[in-house]
Length: 201
Image (cartoon, rainbow, N blue to C red; front, side):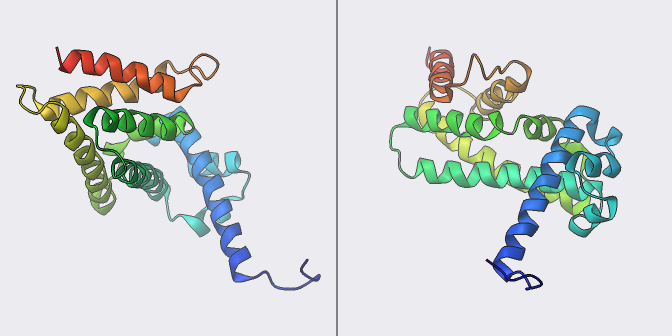
């Protein structure tokens, strides 16, 4: 145990920094999901995160940087975890199930973030917008590659099929009830059956 007055180790300071940063992002996600980007305020985020206003600016320069950080974390995490899953699977159908599970597992525990990612991409500008668009396209490309394997030899438009899948997955924030739909694997299997029966008929 550190002695009174002793300086915290670099590792501990780093953990504290990220813990506070995560708390701010979680608060920002809730405020932006509730009020929209235009209606959200840094003061509201600070109150939600229980941190003083100047403390917010130690971590983020402005509201747009907060929005960028939320979306960057979401899409980089989704793409990285999906790529790792796909490397261990050979069956196209199982790959699609992994796509669905990966998307649900991340966003069911970050429902506010899902709403923000779906509705607020156009609230970004300049380098923030371009970087998030690049991440979204990378994630979309991974999913499109899986759908290409399943629809190989058919006349289905791969881009349109991928967009339909995302439209269905992203709508989850409107109806998901953890009391009724807590089994993500079961939910993903149901989605897989519905989707495959549609594109394989």
